[in-house]
Length: 166
Image 1 (cartoon, rainbow, N blue to C red):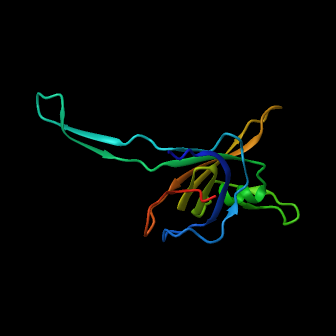
Image 2 (image 1 turned 90 degrees about the horizontal axis):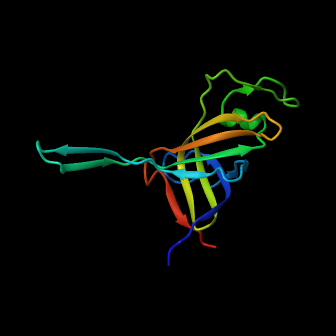
Image 3 (image 1 turned 135 degrees about the horizontal axis):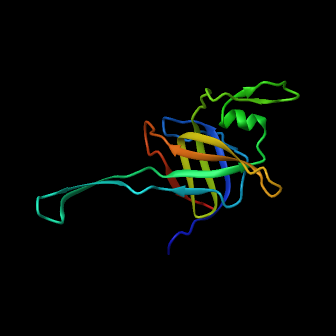
C-alpha cells in the first residue's frame, strides 16, 4: 500500500544547520496562506551526444535539479519583514517601522514542513528568498511569497522526507 501525503499543517523554521543535522529548536514561521505551499522540481538539464547520421543518442546525461519549496505568509508584522526580506527597524521598540533599501543580506535557515498525513520534509540548510506580494484591493491581501532553496550540507542530503509516525 502506498503512502499518500496530504495537506500542510505548519512550516517551522530554526537556525541553519550546514552540518546536516536539523536543529533541536524550531518555531512556527507564521500563517501560511491557504493552498500556496508547493514543492516543485524542475526537469533535469539533459545533454545528448550523437554519432553523425544517427537519430539515437550514444550517450545521454542528466543533471537533476533540487526541489524548491514555495509558499506565502499572511499576517506578517514588521519583525517578519526584517527577518525574511531584510531591512531594519527604523522606528522604536514600541512603534516599529520597517526600513529597507535592498542591500541587506539574510541568514540561511533550517526549514521543516509538517504535513497533515504522509511525508514530512526537512531542509537543514535553506536559502530563503522572500518578496512582498500585495494585492491592495478590497478583496486582496498583503502576502509575503517565499522561495526555499535547499543548500548543500556537510553530511547527509540537502532535503529529506520522513513518513509521519503518528
